Image 1 (cartoon, one colour):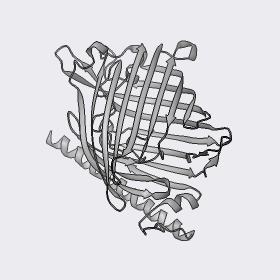
Image 2 (cartoon, one colour):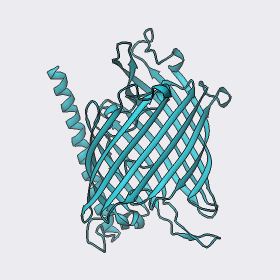
Image 3 (cartoon, helix red, strand yellow):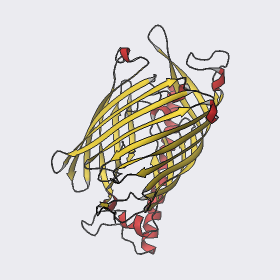
Image 4 (cartoon, one colour):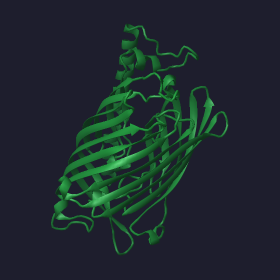
Length: 393
């Protein structure tokens, strides 16, 4: 056991060193490009390090190297995300009201983690300004190792390490109403997977042989109200969303199921330097969805897919204290439950997490903050590198 633990620590240390070197390389690259194009990396107002002008004037291009710290993916890893950001000026609609336009974001991603998971993909989120249409589209392929858990009669959980070779595609188109804070539209999700189980003759109770090679094809719709003051790190405002997905053989899916999601995220300035946030989310599945798409708990400090059921409820609160100039301290905590029947919603122990972290205002003109969170769940500690907000949607 000691050697195994030591080998794991050595691998994590080597990966961390490579990511640190990668971050240093891109920071030096930013500085070289900025000097060549005479772009200042310091804000004209407070003189602090700021990437706003670099993003705007270097053709909107920025590379974000970051740590992957999801416990379900080995707890350590790295990703390189080249991004193109295009900032839009506000427009005046036919009703005479000013409408703010989210920046267009085009990017790619390459990821590798400590448990040998890797993912490559590309995505875009943009707007047709005159038509008041917002859209998202993304696709990727990955070889991902994750643990899923079987509930045993004795009340304990048995862990199964599974390997997924998957292709994923997602797109959504939202039409804004006369009040541009409201929007609605269709969405589509495709997931084609080959799953490698440890023993096909002894599958866990949550899986079937048909899951080994399976296709999930889902058509759905969403309606949203977004009154946040920005999409990256809001200081005030509310975002409400309701959406559903329908999976059926008529769509080329191997599963017949429905999924309904409800989400409410809000921010409010309690004082000039203290921002409060609250997140409420619920998810319900009907029919026979695949085990890997069952509703689960998404909380800092809780591994993905650790707790699942036919329904889940998540609530989380956070405080951001803008302590000194661009630096902020974070505090947060959450409670959640995943269950199969609503009359037994809290019969299992409620899952909790809490933690703290910090943020730095990296791009003032985009209100973009970046930092690190450290969280404690029911079983262990975890840490997260946060770009924008942990509730980024």
